Image 1 (tube, rainbow, N blue to C red):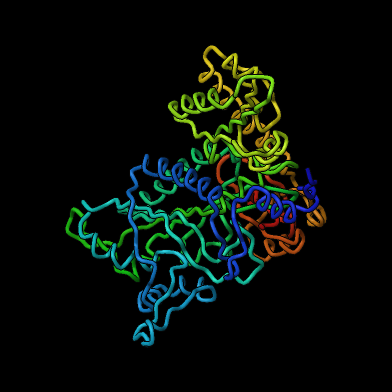
Image 2 (cartoon, rainbow, N blue to C red):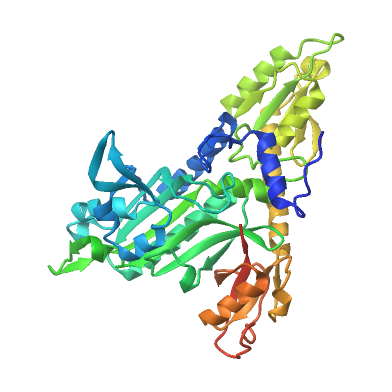
Length: 474
């Protein structure tokens, strides 16, 4: 088994090799930053989408799908929005040999595609709230180094867009999204920290932006997703109005909630180890992999393998039988690298007993069966999920430390919790010191027990400071 790079010393090298080993994606497509979803990666993505859909629909959101192309006339209506994306958009200027009268944009995100239609759909307060989502591809001309799932030019993207009667209801929708993501993240085994981005780093056109960040290695973080409160910043330019009960015309208040394939990259980064990927059971393409081990001395294990696989599928599990001609050790290595939560080994003895030897991805090995074998396997998957999340939570808390001075940020190997006065100049001092970003102020519970914040880490002013987070976004 070839050794992988050390995850903590050479994170990006480790990450790229792990993806290659697990065959989650193929980056050899001839357009940089547009990668091929291989069968195994596609199956993982399908499970991610299922979780997102289940949790957002539980909050009352409904599915839609809008076209990929946006007319330049609509894209330019919201000046702050185009200011945020004009350097990243792909333009379509010809249809066949014909120059288009109005150039078209490949959507970088969908505000400017959806909101002209929202203005047609909404007429009365009875049309509100409007909570809709779509899962589509978006396109951004990423100029930095591209990395599969983390920084790409064609993005598999979940986005919810909502219209509410007023600011209070929009704020309540933000809170609902935070709750939905908490449930999603738990099912994915991903501890994270919600932070309100500083003014200079919020989404273009937003009143405020909340990012969902996970530490991955040293002071490095991955943004898992974001939630934005727009107030009337988009409804004004797009004239999205409703008639209130008193007959007056009012602008709606809007929110968005965005997630992408970065979630898959985060799963790899957070749970992966020196052997490869570690998938939580909820998102694993195959929750159980059965490895039959034929021998000349015992009964053929394949009939029992097929029967057990069928019984487990009947209980709702995703099961794969590795019937390849590789040696058992090579099969074990392959499925450890690919992150299968539970491997069942079935040789002649297990076949005769209608039992199996179960090995989970964290290395726990136990004999199971024959009585109640399906329930035992379900129990092992549940226990694996709990241990995986507990280990991730422990690493999550260990990734943070406080810093009282700018000097403590220099060369930091942890994400830092700092006192900040809120001034942009001090925020940029922090960013220079840590060679990264002031990620924002903490929303909800902090990752470590914290008292009242002290003097600002930059200007040393006492009073009026808040706890903020500084790190190095990937």
